[in-house]
Length: 418
Image (spheres, rainbow, N blue to C red):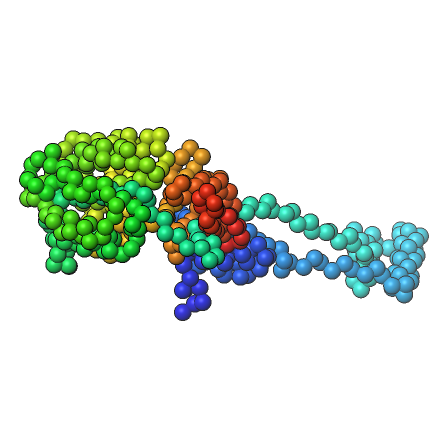
């Protein structure tokens, strides 16, 4: 096995670029040659490879050696030969009429200097024309971490969970022997008993589709907004069961949640858990946008459970985007439980100048996110929320470290080479 076979394309490209910038042409060629030739993610790799080969060829070419000027003794021999040639020519002119005329070639041959007396020649100097150096644009990495010796338990002040209890939740999850609803119950109970939600938060629980099938008005508040109590929340979750043919009124559920939280103050989130799209002609995207309109401390998170269809996931993601929140795809119990946890813990978003989200994550997640170079805004969804300008350079490693200030969170940005 070759030493480069274990490296992924990203690592190969980074190593090749590093060798190129260090003028290590052979290593750059060896590394970049192992990138797939048809990989559209590294269009500049072929150009770098060609330049490295040219640089190696120029370095290998040596200039021609200049000939030394003739020594004095050799010059004396040359002068004698010339004098003899002149004398011979005079004799031929004097007795030319008695001798046959020599061929032109023979006369020229007698005038040629001996081969052991080379004449000095000008040595052409090769001038290398420098090629323009275009530094490839490399993605940067970002991690949002607590500062040293800082611990954050920062859950929203108000939380409303909307639980899907439509008929499709009765479907069995392949390979588990459990129905979707059973897995959702387990994940929800894990969330409320994990300590992620603190007693400083108020919690409400709504559900839809659990009383009778075919009824788009089947949207019910099963726990009003009140101080969080884990045991009470578990009892409420255990009491919900999907109805056969139950509908999916996402828009109606979000509109009802907005009414529940109309007077809520401070950071407020709605968490919508669904295994399907709107089935009652509602407009959940518009309802989510209305809920957060002119309210930066409000957001709508959406968890698509066992969706299995990219178009459906994209439609659900639109609800989260319009609600200033996060979207998660969850295919199993562990992913659903983790998605629920991430909607509650301190999370962040990276947006462009016009507000378009390009990345999102949670405080202290182990894997960094990748960003293209540019200027962004880092939004920390805390109470109160925090926004910080973020300037990202090519191939940079950016760390945003959070610390507690007197009036809320503060962030320090540290940038280094990736």
